Image 1 (tube, helix red, strand yellow):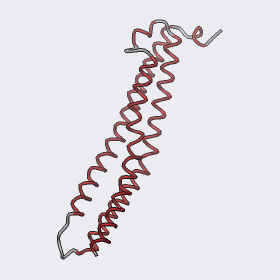
Image 2 (cartoon, helix red, strand yellow):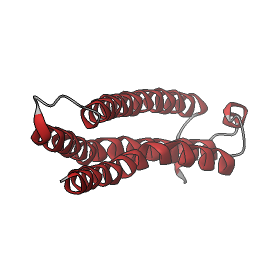
Image 3 (cartoon, one colour):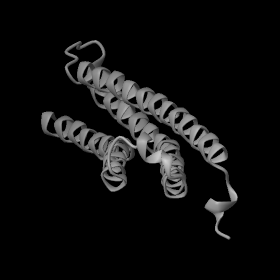
Length: 158
């Protein structure tokens, strides 16, 4: 006897509702993590730009070198620390989508709840999660390049 015939339609529908609720929750977790990360990057980019444009002679060249480098270091560190949490949320979402796909296979009446074909839905979800997963891998190297730019601009000025 297979797993589908062991579960009643009511049990499958309840499992489907739990699955959808968990997916909603995990997307909220991912959204909160990604929003926090991108907001922190925006503040750091603003501070970096302002510090690179600093013309205050009293603060000196040392400030123009150290503060942007410090901001770059903090931003790289945030990218390294944010990536595992974002990746974990994406993995959990992928598992819940697999469970949802299993439920669609088990129940006859759940096809009405699928907005589009299962394969198309998987491609859409994978593309959505790709942005979240790649954000730290984009910002991290960008900050490394900005640190190198800071050092380069400081050395050619002197």
